[in-house]
Every structure is written in structure tokens, then in C-alpha cells.
Amino acid sequence: MTEDDIYRASTQYRLWSFTPETLASLRATTNAAAAESVRAAFMNLEQHVEDHTDCLTIEEEQKIVSYYCLKTLEFVDFCEYPTNVKATAVQYLKRFYLTNSPMTYHPKEIMQTAVYLAMKAEDTFHSVRSFAEKLDVTTESILASEFLLTQGLRFTFDVRHPYHGLEGGFMELLAFTNGKGEAGPGVKKSPKEIREEMLDMSPPPGKSKAKDIKEIVIRCQTAHGKAKELLKTSALLTDAYFLYSPSQLWLSTLLIVDEPLARFYLDTKLPLTSEVKPKIFTVLRQCAEMLRSSPATQPDKEEKKELKRIQKKLEQCRNPQKLDLVAINRAQKRDPDMNGRDGLDENVAKRRKLEREQSMKESEDLFGPVLTNKKG
Image 1 (spheres, rainbow, N blue to C red):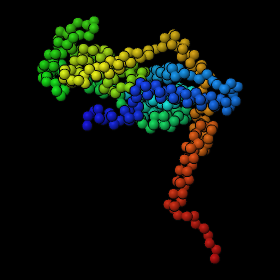
Image 2 (image 1 turned 120 degrees about the vertical axis):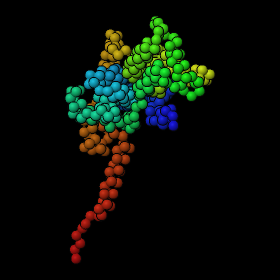
Image 3 (image 1 turned 60 degrees about the horizontal axis):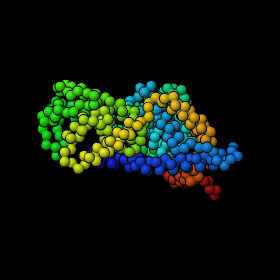
Image 4 (image 1 turned 90 degrees about the horizontal axis):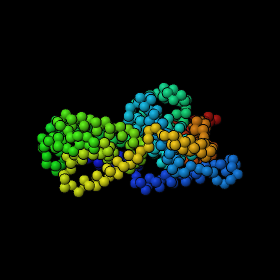
């Protein structure tokens, strides 16, 4: 089984990979459904005389989610958690808001739970108490939305990142500099020939050609560092994970930071006559273009002003039935069949009730019927 076969069997490929069109359609459907629910909730509470509320647009939802992705990066960096925790937490947040709206569940509340869940998924677990102390919140506020988040993630916690691919590619490049690397199938080049081609490789724009193999090593190290930084920022703040595979992501970052080096690497993997190579470069260039369009890690004055406007608008169009997740969680624990106030779907409530009744019946069958005293 090849790496490609393994990836195609993953939940990331089967459930969280889209075309640009299907991704846009999914977000439009989520926004429309959330807006309808918000307006219905306000009408039920008779808080609005008018029959409509000014809800967030799809673009405004995207901006507010992107902002909280940035806040996630800042928080994880502050806590000095591993890169994988940061990347997984951001993907959890982005995945959740494909089928849920900020108007229904505020990203600030989901963000903290996403980081906590990512720590567990990435084997960097801390107690919920110590984690809550870092955020200066209660443990209940973190746990209240945990099951909600897992539902939004469709109970799939695996996130395939491009970091291992980048590290593997970097090690291969260093092996080529040592004359030990091997070419891919169909590429008839000896390790010595590959090493000589590296010395003859075109330099990056604005740089001079390498004089010896030591300068090639430095060049590879520089490209590796820059590519890794792009994967830790731009790849997380765009839709790249939804549209491209991990290998396409890391190769695209290499293409951005040092295109001649990226071309050289692919030439060692695919024959010059390969019909697939032009298609690969087309996809990599599209991915690279998306990564270049990534929002800045620090919003400028105009962006902050726009975010402030959206935040204010969001406060006016949040679903009043979902404002207090802690209270909803408490209510569900007291009475799982509650309907309406906690937003529990009627069918779900009925199913849970039947499951409890069936469980009680099975327990009775296990220990036999209730004993009764018989007279006479």
C-alpha cells in the first residue's frame, strides 16, 4: 500500500476534502440554515417586532472564524504546546464551522474546547483544571461544548499534517548532498549524478549560484525553515487543508520559498517524460497561490475596525437559545429529554429515551423479575 492509498483511506480524505465549489456550497447552506434558526428564535421570544434580523453574511462568518483561528495560534504559542496541537486545534475549529455558524455557537467558546480536545488527540494531555487556569475560565465552560464539538467533527479526530512530509523531503535533500540519495522509479540517475546536478542547480531569485556543496546544504536548511513557517501559519489560516493533500501542501511551500529546489526534488522522483508532472505543478501552483493569499497573522488597522464591526453585529444576531452552553449542558444532564430550551432535537430526545428504557429492561432481564411475596 502506497502513502497515497493510506491517505485516501483516511477520514480526512473521505470526510474533510472538498472542491472549491462544494466547500462554498456547504458554507452557504450552513449560513442560510443558521440565519433562519436565529430569526425563528427571536420571533418565538417576541423580542423583535420585525420578521427579520440582520444576520451575518457568509463572508462575515469567515472573517470571524479566521480571527479566532489567529487567537488559537496565539494561545497555543503562549502555552508553548507542540506545533501539532496548534495545527489540529485550528483544523477542529475550521471543520466545526463548516456545518455550524458563529451565530449559533460563538467561536470564543468553541476555540478553548478545540485546543483542549487537540491536546488529547495529539497525546499532549493536561488536566482540564490546569488548562482552565491558563485561560482563566471554569472547567465547566470547557467541558460544556466538548460533546458538541465532537459531533461537529463527526467523531473524527485524526488530522493529517504536512510536517512529517516536509521533514522527510528535507532529509532526502541532505542525503543527495552526501551522495547517498536514491532517485525515484524510472529516474535513471546515480547518487553521484544527482549530487553534481545539485551543484549546477539554478539559484533562488536574487541569490548567486552555490560554489560548493556546503552552500547547497545551507540553501536546503534555509528553504526548510521558511517552508515550515508557512505550514505553521498560511496553511492553517486558509482552506488549504480542505482542498489539498499533506504532500501537496509541503511541496507548495517549497515551491514558494525556492522554486528551483522544488523542481530539482520532483525531477529526482519523476522522469522528465512523465505526463503527470505538468499536472502536479499546476496543482502545486494553485496551492501556492492560496498560501500566498493567507491573511496576516497581525490584522492591520482597517481589518481590526472591520472585525470590531462584525463582532458587534454578531452580538445582535446570536441565537438566543444557544447563548449559555454551560446552562444547556447542565439542563441536559438533569433531564436528557429536555426539548426547546436546550435545542435538543425531538427525534434525538425520543431515541435517547427509548435507549434508556431498553437498557433498563435488559438489566431487569439480567437479574430476573422482581420478587413478590405470595400468600398461602
